[in-house]
Image (cartoon, rainbow, N blue to C red; front, side):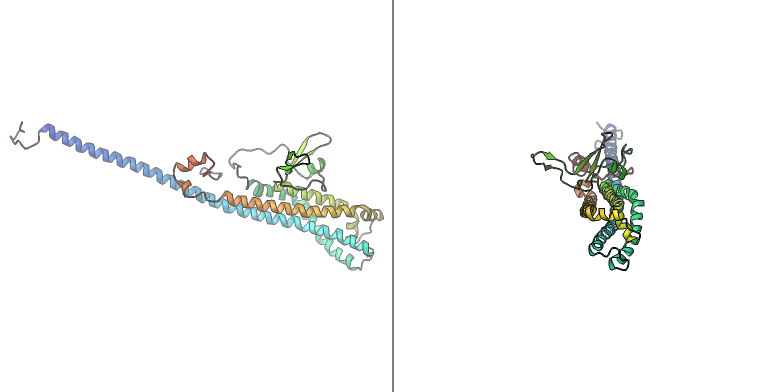
Length: 325
């Protein structure tokens, strides 16, 4: 059948219409594919843009956390070490002066040296006594919390009903000679029973309530050191009288010679161990902060893969406090 012009080779009107439809359908399919690819490309671009913003935020947070933890460790170590060292020196110097019979001579080397040491000690003691609570809270915030790999910074928390402090340690009978730091979580007693020595549970003799000291908490170390420091400060009456050029109470001198010096010697040794334990834990926690922000690797940046692997504990994102976290 020919067309209207009688040309047998010309396409019929129906065939022409079909060809136009086929061409339009092809162009539509192409545009549809192009739209899908464009949308997919937009999603990929948004994903990597969000990932880049997240990584920048994590990098900034890592730098801030590491700087704060390091500075807090330095400040806390210095604030604790100075008065502890001066206290130990005064007690030892008085013991040596008594042994040499020079404690009653104001012009003796021991007495003159003690006068100068005591001035520095009083200032260090005042600084620590005034700021130890703040120091403990800074250690908790910038070392304990920052190194907690499971802590969610966006969670709405409330303060604990019973925050540990120096008053509670005294009220619950903390013993500076017996309650020493330990990081053994799976130790065995004499009977072979497993016990957690990294915690000390104290009981109030009046209320029977319990208070737990966790030696994996840098804050608890600071409070324990300060508690024992204050106990020594209150007990070293004869030493303070002698070092400040005041009249030494004979009864206090006798008590020091016969009883308290040996106790002081034990406590001083324990304080050195406590300070070392605090510093070891703080450095361990600072390293945990570094590991916390260590890159997961390229595979964790692939869309979909990171979410899938996070179900198995891999590619777990660092929790931040904003909408990107």
